Image 1 (cartoon, rainbow, N blue to C red):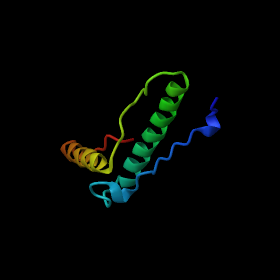
Image 2: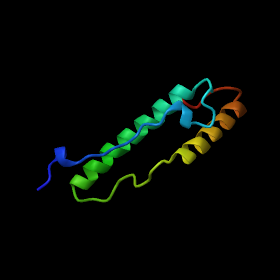
Image 3: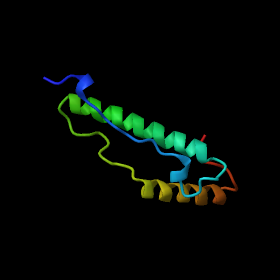
Length: 87
């Protein structure tokens, strides 16, 4: 029977270079938020699998999706007068 130590989940963290605009003022915060979300969903999915359940969050965020999300975040931020939606 496999144990928790037998499960390897290799997730390569995103970098600011993966964003739509790596030079944006909040690029580091965006990457931190997204990487934290990926880590959280990985742990939750592993817990669900350990109980014989389907993945709680069955989506994989690709770099093109991250770029699009960052672009949208920048547009919303601009529409809000420069106020970021991210802490």
